[in-house]
Image (cartoon, rainbow, N blue to C red; front, side, top):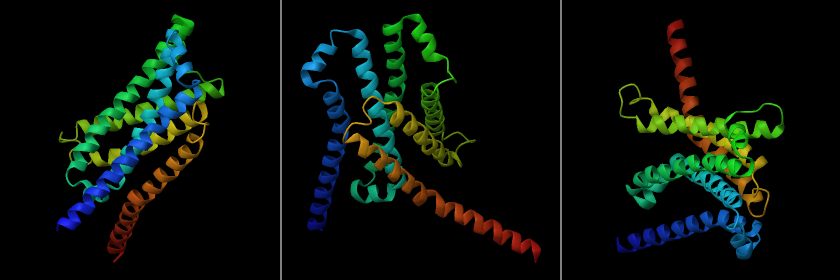
Length: 236
């Protein structure tokens, strides 16, 4: 018993270390692309660059935490074996952190636009464009933000009668939102093409795709089988 408990504690520590190292990657890349500590210090003399710095950081960390939330939710039974009932608490708490970062990212985008271009920059930040590839990629971010927000609202109101039985289905919104955010961040992000993010980003997309197969395909197969079985009974 003691040996099993000790092994579980070691596994918990190992997972926590991996978690911390994973979350240090965006900070490392942003620091590297900003010219190191010296370049970072120079940036703080310019309010527009400071806003742009936090725009980059909040975008990367929002994406990383959304990824972790999806993986955590898809493989919840595994995390329960490692962290017991705390897995649910951690999942809900990290979801709050992720959504705060999602809110912060467009806030810093708007602030950066205002400091760089004034009122016109704010107007351009709020009004979607449809003429350039950049406009399209920005709209992907807006769509992803909207879908994630709907998923968060569904989770928040899950105890209401109209959502009590079906709120878990709203998790599909998080998966779809992730893909829009991936297209947005991968193609327009200032740091996503820098090593190791240029490898980690596609890997995260592959893992999320695998988790979709793991979580939803078996359920879809059961629904199809049940529908066919019901159809067969009606024919008889």
